[in-house]
Length: 120
Image: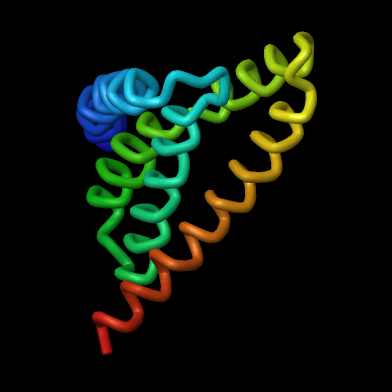
């Protein structure tokens, strides 16, 4: 049953990632991968929010592993950073790596703090 819940969450998260990435990239005419940056930070914010809630195992599988796991994309982050480093955009490759890790960790901490504050 857990595998089915993960698959259901991923069936929503993966298309949401693709659509969000396209939406963001079309509005930023840049070689910087803003779309990937946005989905990864958003997924971390939401995951950070869910962790303190101590969700039941089925909900954690559906939301955490399925939806948010497929919304975020570490492999695309790695590929886009590598692609930037191979071109004349080496500074952007470094900036992407630093900003993505910093924003994602910061978003995770912020999400957890928000959940704790709302829980009282």
